[in-house]
Length: 62
Image (cartoon, rainbow, N blue to C red; front, side):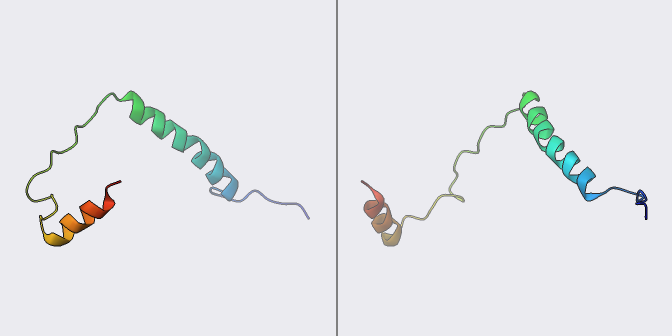
């Protein structure tokens, strides 16, 4: 019995592509030179000043 080549992509072809595509995507992203600044905290995305949060922040200090 001889093996025939299947039509379409095989698992091995997929792994070869995945192994080379990930580093290429990282390199392309780092070479684009486009950087975004982080958003400054506003009143909407800050934690509320309550007794619970004050107690937590006090206990989290070293």
